[in-house]
Length: 293
Ligand code: AMP
Image 1: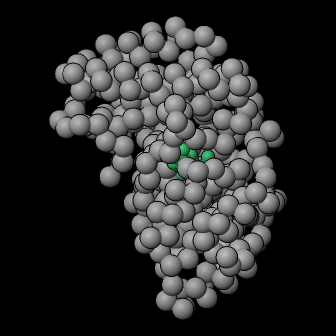
Image 2: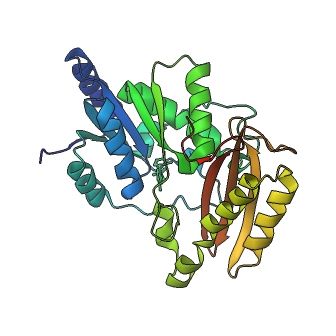
């Protein structure tokens, strides 16, 4: 297995990226906040099929956390991350410090209008401003030909696509299906916060979305009926606090009254200190699908 190169600053990253491009190699980027798991590994494998060198960024981005959120306690284990990147055949880990990304005097942030108004954008003000900013900075540092994101964070993927389109960035955006545990819980670095009992209960999140999907596939088109059924189910389960449970347009992330086309069933719930999110895309005209595109 080849060693993985670690790059800590943007100047070196530019040099390495320029070199790869000069050698005619296609660069694939997997942006992450570290504490890597099978979901991230699947992203690495998928982008590895269409690019020549996989770069994994590991950066817990302070700009996307609210003041009362888990920035300080977010799980970190860099050595373990490196081992996983190595075993997946990744070429390089870009792991800048916060001071490298946001030095004194830093003043530039990206605001993505409308797409960030609902779901996580509503419950985490400023979150997608931080996401759009850091992803754009990672693109300018790593100079990737393609970058891959997970469907688990569907709204994030939508915001990134919008940013790339609006700013004419020359990066192909790929979206990969959600990798789940055996009971359906989406893999997440934050699952680590769960106590064994919360972990057992957390499977309700995906079950609720599946029940919503079954209702839509059975012909229910009133969003309020589907949302009420999902809400009742999730708030009836013990130890859960609902942030949102909803059905929205899968491209615009906007609430709709009548479900049609591609519908995103999405939920964010808290189990104690942990806030978990998940979603399913349903094609009202066809069977349920996972991928955004
Ligand atoms: P994170 O490190 O949680 O910020 O995630 C980095 C990337 O991995 C994002 O594009 C996520 O959507 C993606 N990701 C996280 N969990 C999963 C999962 N269970 N399946 C697929 N992709 C995931």
